[in-house]
Length: 109
Image 1 (tube, rainbow, N blue to C red):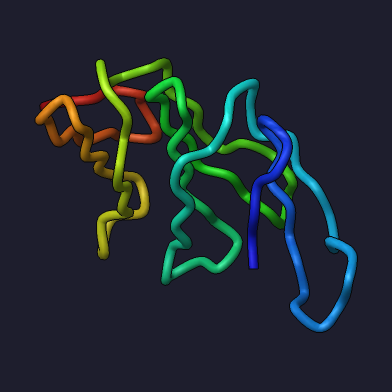
Image 2 (cartoon, one colour):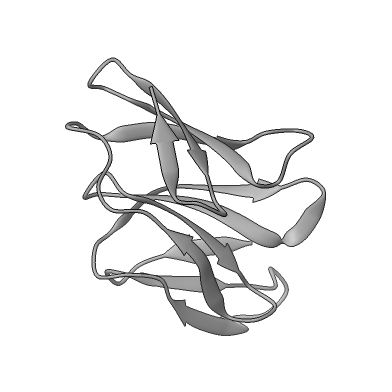
């Protein structure tokens, strides 16, 4: 289980324990959305309040990818491509869906 309480900190929990297992610094702004990657349970896709997107590797406790803000409004959903772990998509209230290539940091509407 994951959660965010403080700005830019991702907490990892075991639901049978009262305290988080660990905390990972993921940025300088709040997190809007968290999604896990079905093919790799250590990867989580995050959208941030500043309209950036990132991929966190919880095993390595690092950000594998962090974009600059890519939307003019709040991102309300993020997903990994089901067959390509290098491709993610974001949907925003600005009316756009963007595709992001993690390895090159390129994005397309």
